[in-house]
Image (cartoon, rainbow, N blue to C red; front, side, top):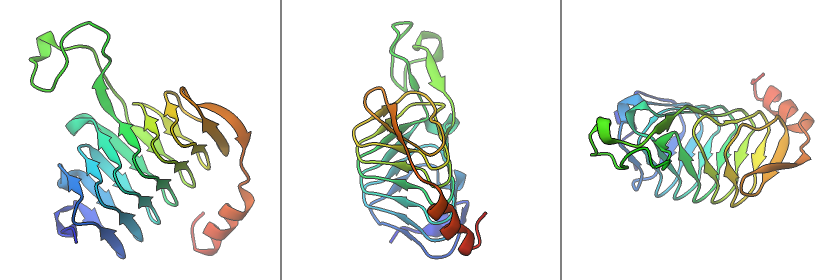
Length: 180
């Protein structure tokens, strides 16, 4: 298993697979009851709440300036990509991490926040600055370019709202577990 002592902080009942790569572990805080599966890659500062599951082959990119916040009771499904910072490919300059700053393309860098009870289905791409609102779900294969509304399901490329989601049971169960 992964050496959790490398992390800035790590709660109890945390399982991080051996085949996880966190390039800046001193910038990562992990809550309680968290599972991070095989093939996860993270290059950003990250805060993970309680009862979070990050499925296999998820990547979070953006370097030292990127930031991802994951609230309690969130799941990120297999193959998803969260881009906290990156080139816009606008043609304003060259792309790549070793290109000198004066010659680089425009870079967009903004935190991504996954609020409690939200979910990211398989193979979703989330762009910088998106807030996946409380209880919101982004459907498989979607591309999220803007923040979502609470308790709404989004699908497509770009992702659009398709239906509302109930909240009463999830909130009640979390409250019984001591979360408000």
